[in-house]
Length: 173
Ligand SMILES: NC(=O)C1=CN([C@@H]2O[C@H](COP(=O)(O)OP(=O)(O)OC[C@H]3O[C@@H](n4cnc5c(N)ncnc54)[C@H](O)[C@@H]3O)[C@@H](O)[C@H]2O)C=CC1
Ligand SMILES: Cc1cc2nc3c(=O)[nH]c(=O)nc-3n(C[C@H](O)[C@H](O)[C@H](O)COP(=O)(O)O)c2cc1C
Image (cartoon, rainbow, N blue to C red; front, side, top):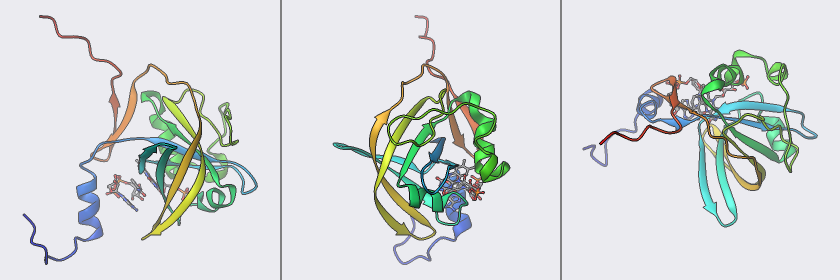
């Protein structure tokens, strides 16, 4: 057990600890007067179901950050097993202006880009923002939901992408 007066862990120790957690992987996208932009994110969490609200933690240093701030809307597109390459593209492998090339994107209520084959998509308006360290915690009210797809999900754990099977076959008795 760590004693209460022990030193604060380093950033690298914290990241190593966080790398042990498994997370769903999302493309967080936006569009509007600030332009179209998006990035890969795992820091997404449900806050409340009344009104339906979730939070996203966004690094203020990311190329997409100014667009999110200006547009005030975003869509959280939860990725499937088929989207590992897309996750790498939106995490910096492809420059911001080229990330949306080569596929069709939809919209729901807010105009933020919706990935048509996402596991699910949460179309949101940003209703509050808190600066915490390097990131902004964006509080987002859900205005529309995309259809839920019955396919394998994508997880990020131990610094690798992994497949989350949709259903396991029942054990034979
Ligand atoms: N929440 C975030 O901002 C995250 C950022 N990343 C970025 O992707 C790069 C590659 O990440 P990994 O291969 O997983 O190795 P890593 O050792 O940099 O990160 C391990 C874990 O620490 C956390 N983490 C990393 N950077 C963070 C940050 N700036 N703020 C808050 N939490 C952070 C995440 O849970 C991540 O999975 C990182 O260097 C980082 O820039 C990755 C995951 C989450
Ligand atoms: C698996 C994974 C999860 C990430 N999660 C987040 C996140 O929750 N919030 C965030 O601001 N950045 C996150 N990032 C980092 C952004 O995807 C990345 O910094 C950004 O897209 C870098 O490119 P840019 O600055 O050119 O946009 C994550 C990266 C990876 C690989």
